[in-house]
Image 1 (cartoon, rainbow, N blue to C red):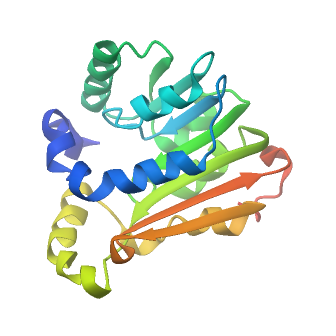
Image 2: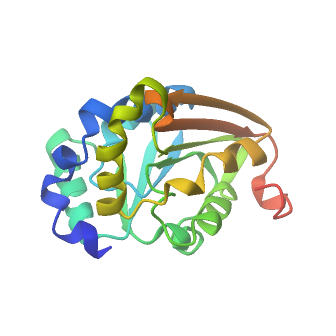
Length: 213
């Protein structure tokens, strides 16, 4: 994505990860109930902000596959992997909606952290990634919407972030989990600015009809 070509170096700071968005990311990973040995697909991994928390949950024996279309973002992710010694991580350059072409299953969990509201073909990306889950596999979607209530003061900043990042907040992408999973949990943070949805698919997702997911 061209918009991330120049900002990759400063993304972790400019994205307001620490003050606003990390809580949603960690809440999602906590609810995935990962275990040592699990294989996790991180779609739209960006600079690898999920990698440390993910690896700590799947060691020993686990694997993380991180996908992102931006070479610059993946270069930052590779730096993070190398500096932290995260040998469990494999990086793949690919668009979110190309996941079926570059990844093989089964995987124990799929993570979409702040990516589906940006990605072209996001419904296909979700469907194809979930199709890789083993029976009982889990999916987490973390994304954004305009804040309300006492958090409404964030709206001007949110509009800027949406515009700069190419976010489509009206998509409400987390509802894909609520509609499709056999069991789902929905957490709302920051006055609705951050939504976390985590779901479990009891049967192989690839055997379902397209209407479920």
